Length: 234
Image (tube, one colour):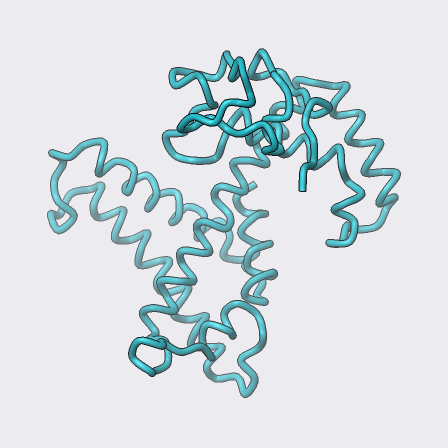
């Protein structure tokens, strides 16, 4: 799922095909994220400048991302038309504080942030959705019928999204049960996923309000896919 999500991000935001680099880049992202998570959890671990195996792997991962992104920027610079995708807008944009173009380093930072945030969490959410559907055949069948009815044998487009109501509910429910966010647990149960907020109308800290699309009904058992209980509130 990470490779697929990375390829989609590459085409949608940067107009490039990352298929050939997907495995190498996803491994670099996972290595870097694992190191970033490890640091605050282990405050007494050796600092990044020390030559440890973990630090070396982290530097190699960052180097892989740097080489890829700087090469992408360099290739785009050589084109007469820098395009209207996200990368093109960054390269044509300016820094209002300094009244100057955005630096290569800042473009690199923005692109890496979007590459990582734009595919790692998406891949996690999609993976949990498949997991839940595999354990809930009726929900899988309902979603399959909707997709066949709306799409037939053609690829989906953005215009199809409002018509894929049940599929959207499945995805929202998967994110409710398994939020792709570090250190997050479902509302009302800091210790696990086996309970749900008894009163969904409450808004208290991590609890979600009643009008939120993920909390439109009382769902008692996590791990139980109940997309029909969710609304697509605007």
